[in-house]
Length: 294
Ligand SMILES: [Zn+2]
Ligand SMILES: [Zn+2]
Image: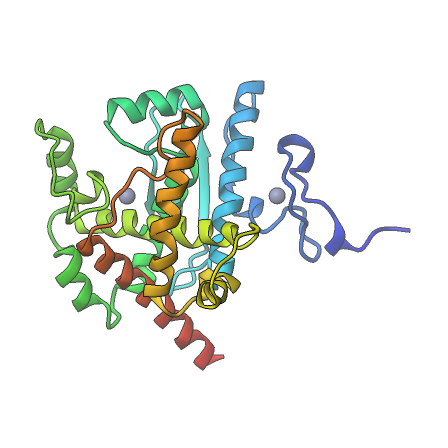
């Protein structure tokens, strides 16, 4: 007897250990089928690196599902991923009209860590790349042409300024100091779109980590337990932050006790808090509209 299609493992289980199942008659799971281009699999190293990429991508797609965000743009373009190896030509990580390109080399711990040090970043992870790039995708959907456009301009700045010129200026800057009270990271200072993408990634870091906290045997008050029922859908932004701030400090302390660097090497200043709040409002407003329309 053949098994029901919906119970079958993703076709990528054997090669990269994908642990998702397929829906319907598809061969690939809801995450793997969004990968439009896979890297050159001529070496076992590339296969191993691709495996790590897809692992991080599944986490991202899990976040998006929990936030009930769609995987298509307003004009119906499906979100897609190109995961490419830079053996032949350089690959730039980025987003363009729903297509997210990732450089396979970022999955190599030594490579990624040396880039992190070279760019003087406190944090560089695969999941962080995915959560940043998806922020660009959702700017088009959640902010552009919506009631959030004016507040965005006020809080993040005017996105109409020349993007490429701003990025070039950013990379040619000799002085790497920046206003830490206004931005979550140095890269966020490069252009309002990058500030949004960085902030969006942090919003995902927060709700996802709080969601993991929900499974720990901790004694929490009633309000905290209520938030942890589903941090992705918590409507009270202050309640999210009230849980996140002490948790972030504790994770860092735990890491230091283990002789490791801070897991969350960031400060959420009042200005950054305002930006995160806008991300939260834009996601919630979109979800409310969708459920009204349904
Ligand atoms: Zn899969
Ligand atoms: Zn970006």
